[in-house]
Amino acid sequence: MKRTVITIAIAAAILTAGAAFAQESPWMVRARAVHIDPADRSSPIGGVTEPDLITVSKKTIPEVDISYFFTPNWAAELVLTYPQKHTVKVDGTSIGSFKHLPPTLTLQYHFLPDATFSPYLGAGINYTRISGVRLDNDINLEKNSWGLALQAGFDVKLNRNWSINVDVKKVQIRSDVSMAGEQISRVKLDPVLFGVGVGYRF
Image (cartoon, rainbow, N blue to C red; front, side, top):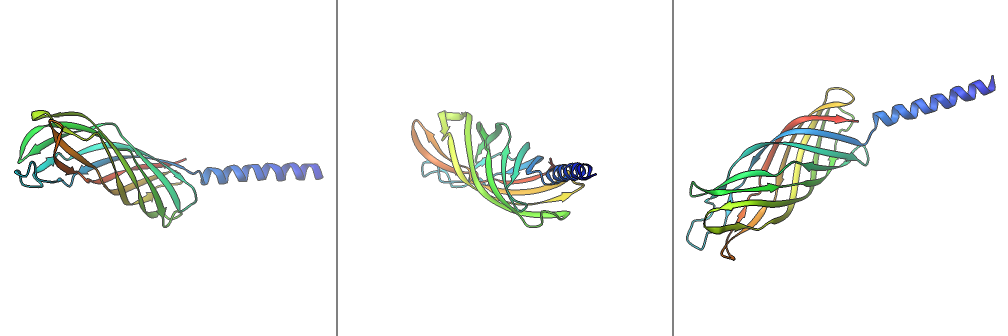
């Protein structure tokens, strides 16, 4: 009898631990549709062209992010996508295009992690790799950009695993513009990223 009680107690403990782990898994994956809205700030080109007339096209892209929860409130989020192509215009006239890949890592604080409506704030760092530059007159862009990222959003839980997510980020992306090896301007893309998607907590 005593052995049976001990066996039942051990089995119950294992089942309880397994259930707790399933409920408190630290991993979450989200898939979002994200609209990129660049700030389009620039310095004068060669002291002739007025500032802020270099514009980069807006676009909507797919995005996947992976979050790891260190505690119920604190999480790290890594945002991933593939290189995105943008058209560049000066005074409304297209001068070519470039691609950029902007992985972003943020540290988030989730205010109400157990609630159906769970808002959060985040801050972190963005690294952007610029490639595929095809601009008129041999104009080139600086290939690497490091900047800050700020974030706000919320999750609405549908059940234990699935949720709806709304997310907004402001990201620093900046690049020197050069021609014939000399800097002629500096663009500040600094986009706002509006995202809507779904999340799955393992």
